[in-house]
Length: 310
Ligand SMILES: C[C@@](CO)(OP(=O)(O)O)[C@H](O)COP(=O)(O)OP(=O)(O)OC[C@H]1O[C@@H](n2ccc(N)nc2=O)[C@H](O)[C@@H]1O
Ligand SMILES: Nc1ncnc2c1ncn2[C@@H]1O[C@H](COP(=O)(O)OP(=O)(O)O)[C@@H](O)[C@H]1O
Image (cartoon, rainbow, N blue to C red; front, side):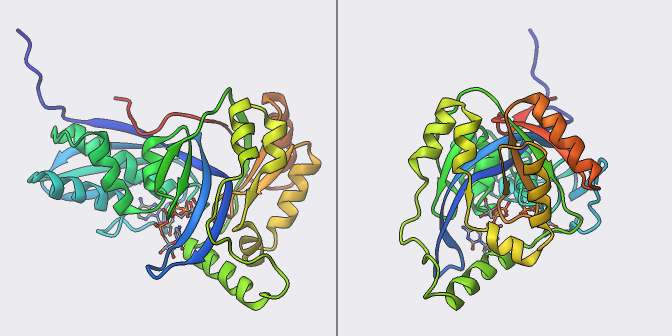
């Protein structure tokens, strides 16, 4: 007879995301905006390794500069681990190591992926068996994007972006991601959108009362057709992100001239995601962006959500 020993180390991988469509409604009393977004999980990953320890700690590895990310109790991964411990009555801590591929404060949900991966990693390590629904409920308490990082694939997010319904998607979409030297703060970009709407109330489209994802976006995803999707990429946070980082206009121009079907600021930015026809086009656009001095990565989507890999 074999006995199942408790694991001494669990590794979980969770993806970054691109918002292929993001409509932002009015600011609510809780400080959040009502949104409707279509998320696509893409092949830039956060790998979180969890090992038993007496207390809670986190460290980062990998090539990305994480000097600005806190490693104290405010770190989203530590907050995720503590939530599982509290929910399940687990005593003892965890040592977390995060191998980071998703740019920091880039609008691609790296911190959310850290939190989502940690939820599953500690649940597996400690054998707390909270289940998918239990972990998804904890995910929503950690941040608006965390449930999607947990679920992955393609989904529509409403409410704060945390109420998910799956969306059908066919095939594989190819993206080139142009990174920026400086990050953008998510609340600052939402505030800039509100300020702009307030200031130019008479001239611009007001915040939608009930934001929705347009049906042509869902059709393009379902058809797996990058040309169709390129025509309907949209992000209400793009204009405020560009006001905060005007150089993004040049980045968009370079990628589109290099043959991208379309470019869009991802989430609150400043990463710019270029949708391209296929792998060859992705290489060409990546080369042109690099030649202009930008850091450019290739990715594909949709990919799976948080999953144990080790
Ligand atoms: C803009 C988006 C688009 O997917 O992603 P990122 O660009 O951050 O990756 C999300 O709405 C961000 O999600 P996330 O980064 O998880 O947000 P949270 O930590 O929950 O919230 C940070 C802050 O952003 C603002 N916020 C966030 C979500 C939302 N629907 N309305 C908001 O106004 C609030 O000021 C909130 O205090
Ligand atoms: N694991 C983490 N724990 C706590 N904060 C994080 C973590 N990863 C990133 N952050 C911080 O959260 C903010 C948003 O980061 P991130 O999730 O990378 O970008 P975005 O919200 O733009 O997708 C940044 O200020 C960053 O320093």
